[in-house]
Length: 315
Image (cartoon, rainbow, N blue to C red; front, top):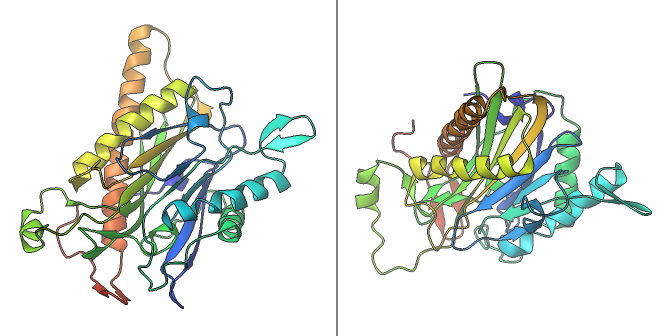
């Protein structure tokens, strides 16, 4: 199904721990310098950092790294480590005396799944995941499943294991659209009514969840077009997971545009068609990345019992 790294210049790094009470980690998407980005947060329980800076009405337009992390709001400290790596490497918004890296982040809830509530990502793990991404070769394969921010991920009210997945598509004219997802959803794959009947909600309170995604493209988009692409990509969550965007999910989609390939803007009609085509593809690859993350997740034993690998049809 391809990978987000099919977009030239995009690199992905993971760091995780799964022993000694740990079941959590960090994933960093590191784009080339000068990449434009935005975000759309749809979930009712988001845990995010620096997403306001990605609004099209704000001053900055570029993104230096995107951090996806476990640990709920505590894990957002991982963004500070990614920011430190970017500063050391001269990446960031230029200010007198230096740079301020723009490093948005979003977190999933996996607290305590390894047994220790206090075992959650910190700045050191964020730095290590960013360094891991930077050390990768262009076009590298992306590890999937129980890695990085997907290490402690679960789906279906914590019944099945979730994980990291990725996918890409190449459109006519050479436009590449890729996505990476961390699947930690309240819902199950859309259409699997049998699994839903076997694991009814009952009177149990909904667990805290979140599905995170990063969409990347080699197309030239401005910040507002990135925002609209992130918004359109949320349709991929709704096609993949039922339910999605709930009060108990922090569903968030980032969009990164490398700017290597101009879209057809020869007329207003051509501009609209090219953007609609790209944004439709973004929704498709997010759906595929979510399915990939579920399909590659492996069963794990936790203090609360085993989280089984999902046994339904994943397509």
